[in-house]
Image (cartoon, rainbow, N blue to C red; front, side):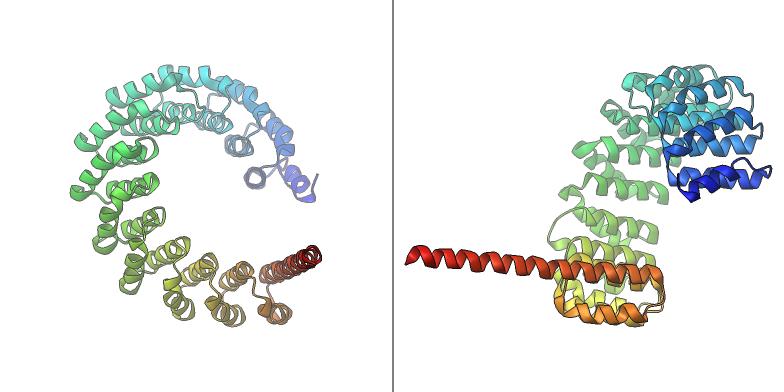
Length: 408
């Protein structure tokens, strides 16, 4: 067992609740199943509510179904609503169908809204469509927005296509923006091409920002050329930078030639940096070589670190030799560790033999270890490319000799 996990497991037994909770969260982040037994023991032995909640969350993230029975038993025995809710959410993350009956009964019989909500969300993660009818009934009959939204979410997590007509109707008729936003998301997940017409129609008249954003993202998930004009209009004209950013992301997922020119034009006009960042990323994914000069200019002049980082990544994605010199300049001079690191990453994609000696020099000068590591990755990639080229040349020479032999 690694020293890191051993240290965290020791901290899990600390008398200080803050230390225990931090250890549980870190163990969950590591996702190592070797921590499962001690986490389970902590649930059994530690009476502190916040510790038990943190441990349940960690077990859910680790995903070891050995913990299912304990989580079920703890839900049944523990009177605290925060603990009970945490156990249900963890069971959902485990995705073990052995928890189905417990979750189903909790939906039907529990009185506390927060527990019913957790059970509804969790049951959608079990991939058991037996509950789909009950979830649709909750959407239609419940008064609580939280329970309705939880049921909608579970239906699209289950991939229940039979719920699509109900989603369409709610998108058109509900006066609750939170519900409209969730069914718009659901249509993007399960609606397919049939959802395009209602989504586009509502987008034109929808006033609520969250709903419009959900629609734009769903159009990107469906990724059909029918929605291109609507998404371009949003990118150019929507007042919300959040929605313009989502439109740039959605256009990234649709492969139509004219999208790149629209993105390049909008890059010059866009006043908000995080929208520029998304536009640049989309140009990279479209591998638009005509955008290299514009992206290089952003890389050199933007004051926003995330925008420069996106520009470096995009140049790596486009993979054009014209980007080599600007990337080397960035690697040498940029003040941001993140930007330098991704400039090195982009150079690893370009595999320029002529960059090798410069990269070796820059690695010696570089002070940050993560950037050094990425520079070494670029050097290794170039060396591998050289070896491969030499191997191919040797094979070609051998074939030429054989052909010459057979000819004579």
